[in-house]
Each structure stands twice: as C-alpha cells, then as structure tokens.
Amino acid sequence: MIVMEQVVDLVLSAGELLLSHGAEMYRVEETIEMMGQAAGFSRVEVFATPTGLFLSLHSPDGPVYTRVRRIRRVRNNLSIISEVNAISRRFFHGQMSMEEVRQELETLHKRPPAGGLLRAVIGGFGAAAFALMYAGSWGDALLAGAAGMAMLFATTWFDKHPVPTVLQAATGSVVATAVAVIAARLWPLNSDLATLGAVMLLAPGVVMTTAIRDMFSGELVSGVSRSAEALAIAVAIATGVAVVLTMGGL
Image 1 (spheres, rainbow, N blue to C red):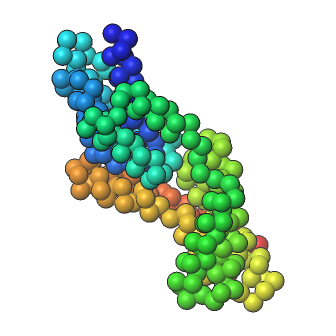
Image 2: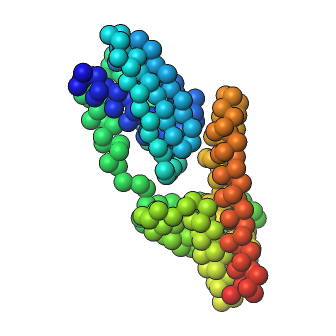
Image 3: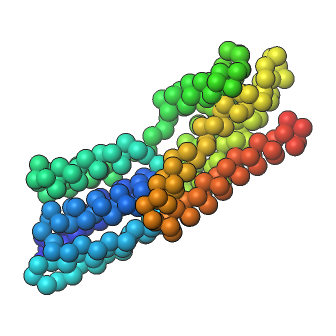
C-alpha cells in the first residue's frame, strides 16, 4: 500500500511539473497515462486544466487512487517540459527505475526559476535584435537592449512574490517605456522603436502557441482560457506603454 501511494505521488509530481511550466493539456495527460501504465496500473484516468489536475489510478488489485492538485502559478519553461517529457518516455520504455525517476523529478522541483544578470543580458540582446528588425539604428538597438534589461530586472523581482502575470506585464512595459523615453530625451534616439523592441520580450508567444495547440487537440477549456490569458497580457502591455506616453512621456 505504501509503495503504491509513492507511485501515485510520483506520477502526480510529473504532471504538476508539466502544468506549472506551461505544457499543453494533451502532453500532461499523455505523460501521466504512460507513467501510470508503466508503473503497473490497470487503468489511468486523468483530466488536466490550466489550474488543476485530477487523476485516478486503478490498481490491478482493486484499490483506486484519486488525487487532485491545484496549480496556482505557471512559469513558462520549455526546458523543464522537455526534461519531464524525456524522463517519462525513458521510464515507460524501462530505461529508468522508479527511484531514478523520483530523484530526477525532485531535482527539477528544486531548480530555481531563471533570473538574474544572465537572463537580463540575454533578454537585452533579444530586445536589441527586435529593434534592428524594425529598421532601427544601432543606437536604437542599444537603447532597446538597456530598456529590456531594466524591464527584466523588474519582472524578476516580481517573480519572487505572488504577483499576477498580467500585473507583471503592465509594470514591465511601464519600466521599459520610461527608460526608452528618458534616454531619447538625452540622446537623439528613436524611443518608439526602442520601446517596441523591449516590450516584445513580454509578448505572450508561448501562451498563444499553447492555446492554439490545445484548441487543435480539442481541449476547448484550456484553449479558451489560455487565449484569454494571452489577450489579457497583451492588453496589459499596451496599457503600461500608454500610461507612460499619456503622462507626456514622463
């Protein structure tokens, strides 16, 4: 009984990791079904939503193990999703033991979210590239990179607190726009292109892609809810930029 309980918790842990890092619903359900079957359960029933996970694992001996897990926060991380996906496949094909899976999943659970200077620098290069793509000068790209770095430092601080994603997007766009506008007043640079390049880092591309993928898979609840989330983030970004510009660009 104790062993089966541990197996159920292990399967639930894998599903929670996928859901909390932005995986598609079909991937979450497929992973749990594969791991449950590999663990020896005769039937696996799972229902995943963006904010919750419900599963029942039927043991060949008769007992049914039912679990519910509430997902309160999602941090999009494709690397975590890829690693959990690979672990579940290796376990399904008998290439990993139960203990190895448990250790790997615990390591992923304890992995801190991406942040700090490295994330800001990489994001700065991305913002600069967007500015160049929009026909900006190298000076505009440099300003976009600086604005993007300042914005990421601000949003990284928010990640340490229970701040909604929509509010993070609005605050980040305010910071990026303010930096771009202030710098453009000191040097002859295009603040519009710099702002556009910086706020592109906040665009909900992963959320929109996942929403479309869920819709194509027939997961209407997840597809509609994630589409609404992407729309809310986009509106928050536009609102943050508009607030700074409406105030006369500071």
